[in-house]
Amino acid sequence: MYISSPATCKEGVNPFKGLTLAAFDKVNLHIVQNLSMWNHLVSVANLSKCVVQHTVTSSRHGGLSFSSLFFRAFSTSMVSEGRTHYSYIRVPRSMPNIPIPGYLKDGTVKRNHRKSGRDPDTGRIVIRHKGGGHAQTYRIVDFVRVPALEESEEPTKIRDKVLHIGYDPCRSGRIALVAGDGSNKMKIITAPHEMKVGDVVTASRGKPESIARLKPGDAYPLAHLPIGTLVYNVELQPGKGAQLVRSAGTCAQILNKTETTARLRLPSKEEKDIPLGCLASLGRVSNIDHKNRIIGKAGRNRWLNKKPKGQTGMNRTLWRKKRV
Image 1 (tube, rainbow, N blue to C red):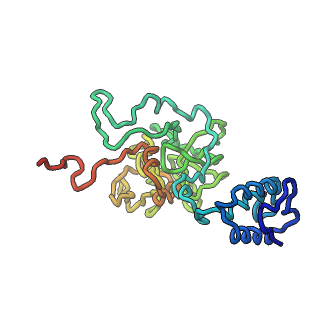
Image 2 (image 1 turned 135 degrees about the horizontal axis):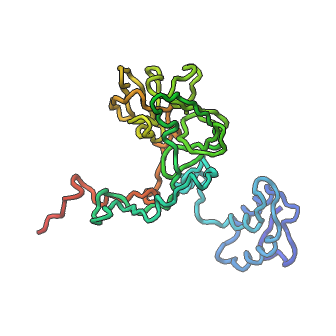
Image 3 (image 1 turned 180 degrees about the vertical axis):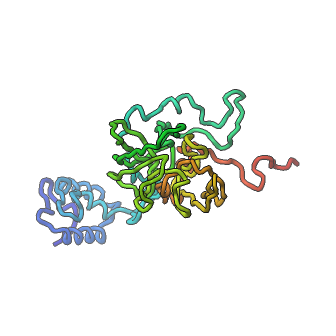
């Protein structure tokens, strides 16, 4: 079955009624081979009136109209069947925003805070290549986990259950919303790799009950962790809060111990001595594929408060074109 010319289609009569998709493809092929597109614009317009109301309900075309399929036959541009350019540059949101209570947000941290890298008094640039960036709401993350012990005070153990694991715009690693220890008040901690919703993590300034039962996310002093353990969120002073190894996918390793300090190999391969009373969490920070992300375009760096360097060459700051 085929149609010799679009002009033979009478208005109000649908010649494609009961036509299968395979037969309709033959109709398209016949029309393309036998008609001149420029000499039959009027005829094509008349034919489109007949087919504009007929739709396809099969899974192949998913409800596209016959008119749309008809005009595809006259398309002169190549259509890519693979991935689009946008699919490479869009930001994948594998981790959704988690419901965070208001007392764990601090909007005043970023409000009226200059992000151009300038000194607040002199106005001069003190940090280069900074400026712009999307507005962010700061999440208050608990880096202390357990307060430092006073003299003659026995250590306590805090148990928290993981409620949500989600995205934080102010850091590269994921965060976890936890609650427990007999209280309904929630807090945010840095989520380690392989942490799941429903896990129970413990933190204490004392000795763990069993080394074999330790899991990622548990926090204990370096004095009670065995040599070779991988840790993150390491304190520099007991009770001050974690200051080292907080970026996505990073971890430090305990190399050896002395009477007062423990030597750690940091992600930069530097070896540093840390007091034994400092707290450290077991495991490594989540989002280990952060280093493999594809920026995709220059505008995404501007979202992240990064300005371009500007010039190119060996000396980008002092080089000037020679005057003749």
